[in-house]
Amino acid sequence: MNERQTLDAVKDYYGRVLQSSGDLQTSACCTADSMPVYLRPIEAQLHDEVRDRFYGCGSPIPLCLQGATVLDLGCGSGRDTFILSKLVGEHGQVIGVDMTDEQLAVASRHRDYHAQKFGYAQSNVRLVQAYIEDLRSAGIADASVDVVISNCVINLSPDKGRVFSEIFRVLKPGGELYFSDVFSGRRVPKHLAVDPLVLGECLGGALYIEDFRRLLRSVGCLDYRVVNSRRIELGNPDIEQRAGMIDFYSKTIRAFKLDLEDLCEDYGQVAYYQGTLAESPHQFLLDDHHLFKTGQPMLVCGNTAAMVGDTRYARHFKILGDRSTHFGPFDCAPSPGGAIATPASGACC
Image (tube, rainbow, N blue to C red; front, side, top):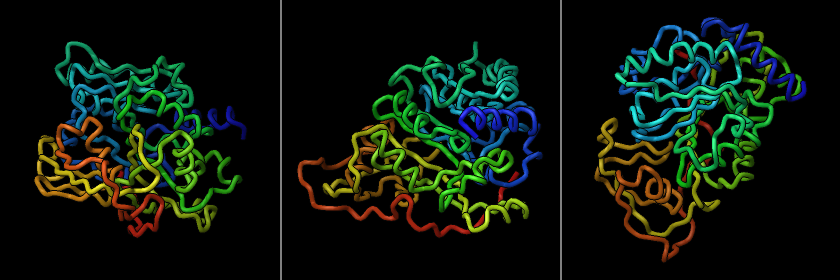
């Protein structure tokens, strides 16, 4: 399939074939991560139709969003978009972008419903029909967005390089990309990548982790972090047989628009989380090897110091030291794309 045929196949699958999460043929496009406790009361307020037509593989909603402008790529029926609407507050803004008429129609007809639920005078959600490969067509300007999220959508794009280029174009300096998606331990062969069912189930376009690293490097992002990762049990013998030895993973990733180094370097810096985020008073999880406990000092590399000290998280951290003295490489393992030792898991739909 060419790029247009791929996009049309995805539109058809999510617009016509799938009517609810119960129509999925595997567990790949079904959330495998438990929703954080603080989000559950918000999720309970969402319209039933929005929840029923949710197809995601994680819970890619970071902390510290009050007043932010957040972009939801591939917003679909709007589950994450409307949760974000509550989190950014009435004076924040959420932009939901999707290419599928039927999915966007669900979100559109419940936009005012959620504004009323949250007690807003008017909705803070803007929904745009556009392609995530071309955010200019959605009217999103350079350096205008604080946070970009996406939930199991980037794998569906036939031009992921353009997607990541657009993400880092629209992010403000210090802005954050926080997304969940399906990754693979090897490249998916072309005959599977063009299979409409395998593609629609978020497997055909799964990102090979090393190709993902190269894509981010190509747009100037030299360090990203894995927040969590788990192997996907497909739960479909036919697709498992076709996939053969390919291992698929649901991963949540965060990356920042920062001037970072391509290796973790030691400048003798120490970071303290001050416990001032209401949703997480006792600890702050940056990634799978940086869990900051409130008030406890942690030695950090220069990149990690920038991620918590030169972003919207800065007011919640105290950083000691600067980059005036270099002590050599910093052991910041496990590194992105390294060995995955998490157990296999199905979804909880």
